[in-house]
Structure formats: structure tokens, C-alpha cells
Image 1: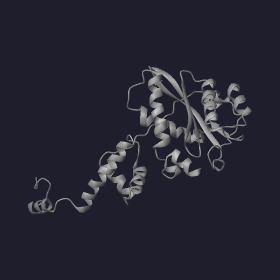
Image 2: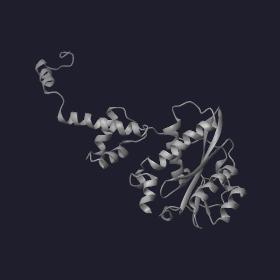
Image 3: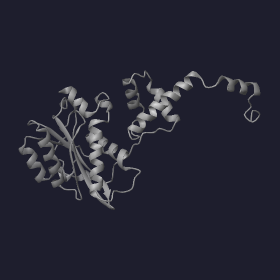
Length: 267
């Protein structure tokens, strides 16, 4: 074997006697901690979040070192793409402008964002609607239905209003879907002093916070598993995930805290 790899016998025996280097031993100890955080996150935390968790526990570790150890051991955080082509979307009604400005979201209940995504249940598409506070990233309300309608979006919005009781002037930003543009929905939010805002045509990133939430949910709870057999099964998974997302999942954009912790600090 030494001849095959062009290594001298003395060199090989010297390497055997030396054993693992101090840094290698440190990496092995760090790997145990990293793997534990990775497992507890459900395989969704990458090196930045795990680095912050370790630093908060007193480990002065560099992000590059954590990334290297994760890469060497095959610890890769799950991600997903969530878009489905919808012909004719760019021809939707364009009368509602994009009023969702970052400067306005300087505290909770100033800017909410909402959207609908699709999940397969029993071989059919079912729809998940969510309302999220842009400033704290907290999921306020959500709902499921087997049809994509304004009734679903209004039901979820009404639930959010009951929970938070926001002041007049709240901006609610969504995509340009008819479920949010319909008279049934628009009239009711306007009566409560809510100002609607919508994506610019062909600008999916205008609602990036909601797109990010759906991408995380699908990557962390849906992809890699069989279809849900019933809506109750999906409901249970979503309930667990929202609790995890609001109370346990740390977010880099709010100082590596959870939405619940962040709102408590603001209060």
C-alpha cells in the first residue's frame, strides 16, 4: 500500500505514531455539537444559524469552520423551490399599487403579508393561506381549503384581525391573485381601515417574506415524504410547524431569535 500511494514506510509509521492532530480532535468534538443542533432543527439549519447557536452557548467558533465540518460530514440544510407556472398571471388586474415599503415595517402590526400555496392531499391540490407580520416574521393566522377562493383568504384575514386587533392604516401586502383582489375580500378589509398593497407585475420577489416561509415549510415538512392522505393530516403537520416556526426556529433577519422572542423584546 505504501508503494501504491508512493509513501515511505518510515513516513507511514511516523504518521501512525503521531495520531490525530489537536485540531482534528477539536473538529470531532465540534461535529458532535453541530450534528446535535442540525438534528434538533430537523435538518433545516445551515452553518450561519448553527454558528450563532454555538456562540450563544459559549463556543467561539468561526462560521467557515462550521461550514467546513458540515460539508465534510454531509450535513446539508434542506431547501425547496415552490413556484408553479400559472399562465395568464401577468395579465391580472393592476389597479392596486405596491405600497409595501420596508421603512413602514418598523414595528409589529404595521405591515402584514399574505399568500396562498398548494399542497397535494389525496392526489388533489389543497390550498394553504397564511398571514404573517413582516417586521417580526411571526405567523399570525393560517387556514386550509380544497378550493382557492376569496372565502379562504377572508377567513384567514378575519382570524388575524381577531388575534392582533391592529390599528387603522395597517398595510396588507399580497400577490395579484383574484382571491385578494375580489370584491368580497377588498370591501371587508377596507371597512377595517386596512390598506391593500400588491406585487408589481412579474415581480414575485415583492412578496419575498411569504415566499420564504412557504419555501421553508415545504422543504422542512413536505419534501421527501408521501402525499398527505387527508386534510386533517396536513392540518396536524401545519399546526406543529407554525408552533415550531414562531417559538423555536431562529431567524437571521431578526438577530437569530424566534419571532416570539423578538416580539417580547419589542414589548
